[in-house]
Every structure is written in structure tokens, then in C-alpha cells.
Image (cartoon, rainbow, N blue to C red; front, side, top):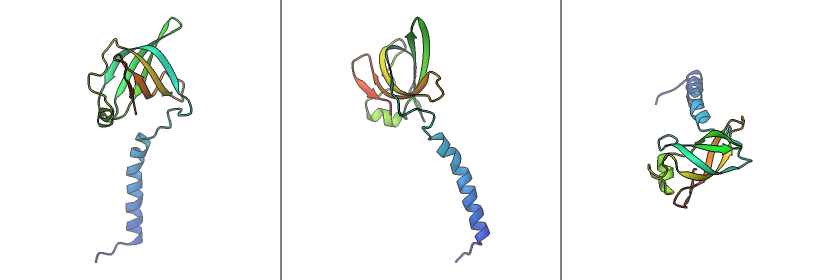
Length: 126
């Protein structure tokens, strides 16, 4: 049987925790205000990135004569595929209605909750 000193065991534990911290930070949703849901109707798709680890929908919204670009984070390709998404679900220029958890810092963007696509379906972003 191999014996490990308490010091060596403690060192292994500290290194393990230090390496795990970036993974926990990457999967944090703290940047999104999940107490609010913002909606935008008639947004225009500017870009759709169906990629891992997270997909993105970028839309332009006409707000009082000025166009604001929103970047909306979504889930992984695998998770989105399970609820009906495909690489060609959205095309540049498509009109969509979106609901999302906004960024806490007030910048235009957030975590996509739902999107009503051109064919009338409503899909979940997470």
C-alpha cells in the first residue's frame, strides 16, 4: 500500500482546486440578470454562430430610430439540436422575436431564453 503524507495530500488538493476554478468561472451565469426577461420584437438576424461550447445569435434592433446590436449567448450545439435547432435555423436578415436575460452591466446582450423564428416556431436558447 502506498502511503501519502498529509503535506502531499494537501498539496494535491490545493492544485486540484486551483485547476478547477477556471472551469467554474466559465460556467457561471452571474453576468446575466435572471430576475428580468427583456423582449424585442422584429429584431433582424445579423449573425448566427452554431458552435461549441456556446452558440450565439446576434441581432439588430431598431430602437427609436437607432439600431442597437445585441449578442445573445445560447447553449451548446448538442443541447440546441435536441430542441429543434439546426445550423441553418437562422439566416442573416430573418426577422425574429426574442426573449432574453439581459447583461447585468447594461450593455446590449444577454442569454437567449426563447426566439420566435421566421417559420413561426418558438425555440429555446437554453
